[in-house]
Image 1 (tube, rainbow over the protein chains, first blue to last red):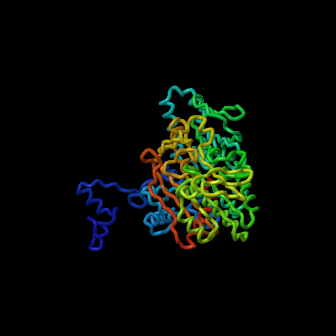
Image 2 (cartoon, rainbow over the protein chains, first blue to last red):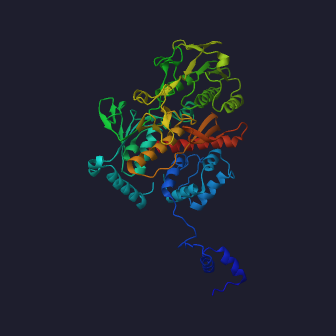
Image 3 (cartoon, rainbow over the protein chains, first blue to last red):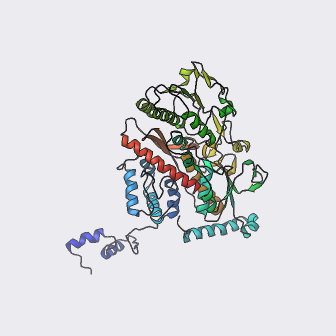
Length: 123
Length: 427
């Protein structure tokens, strides 16, 4: 029997991979899929989708920005890329072009783009 | 670009195997491993972009040929920035050396006709280039008779400079020879035409050059067949701010119609007045490039209807039309649009010829216009297939009274965009 304790109850209920939570869900008949390695619920990014969507970005975003107008996004971490694009989508960052482009991107598309640019060092 | 991934290799190989099973009529060709052929007519932002994107993303699975008569391509986009004296002519002129190094066959001859039955492009010298898929991106041709008194001959003294190169250089020579007190007349084009804000950016560049030279009395008169124009409120505000009293725009209700232009005397007559101009920039009505019209791809408008899901010609399932030659729905005729349309076409071509995954088409455009040094305005949007055309989804435009820093940042953006799109087309 697992020792949980008062503080442990919260972690059981909130932690996806806590063994006691998994046991509880199984007992309730809820199918449980264990994500092996890394964060729970991690999906393989759709790099082909990322490549297609990135074609639009590549007209403006190059590795070396001559006048500092448009930043380099190649090799940017996925987390940072997603944060920035969502900030434009939510209009927390101002730039009419980026707000319009980001405005039509869904979360899975942002994820695909982020994965593509993280793995692509140059156009 | 990333190396060929295992996933893509399997995808391409799997597609090839499926095509062998599904198309027994082509089995001998497939077994002989002949690569499918893409031919692009036109080496600008439309055709040039398709050629490069198919070539790089298909990783050798498709043989790509680019037909462009000019060995050096001068971009119409940013030619106004050259007119304004902000950059030299050579900075807007590019060659195809890098394109060749990427493995694309570049043919510097004119395409004379298209044999759609045999799927061959016939070059001016008679040689035939076979294709499985064809991209026709010839840009525009000028309707010489759309302005009374204008002609190809007249353009030698009254430049249009709407097809760039020697015409743009002629315009700049004329502009820089003007004396204080001279009158410049611009005849703006009717819709639809290449680059909606272009004539007004050009008039701004005329004003900038003359102001820089200390002109106090010179005038620029724009005679427009249209009742309004792209970014009009922004240009009007900018002209009043930077060039008070110098730029005068007349709509058709004011001038009453262009009666004639005279290439010898540079006299321009409207219903309202007669102008003895020192320089006349005639920007006539336009149509799709001749090769597209002769091939039966254009309709009565002179431009080519396309399927917005793919950029395929509505007349021919093996042919794509991108850029200024097509009917772009809500999208403007711009280099940015041509480049955006080209990427959808490239995706569809890779899907059909190499079994690559395809996704729903989406498009975008941004147009930047320089009014005076560091005062740049923009307009743009996103587009998707809808109601049978390229339909605007969201749009944006600069606002009057914006801070100077924002307008300066727009200019910096436009420079980086130019460098980006040039790399997209020319490598």
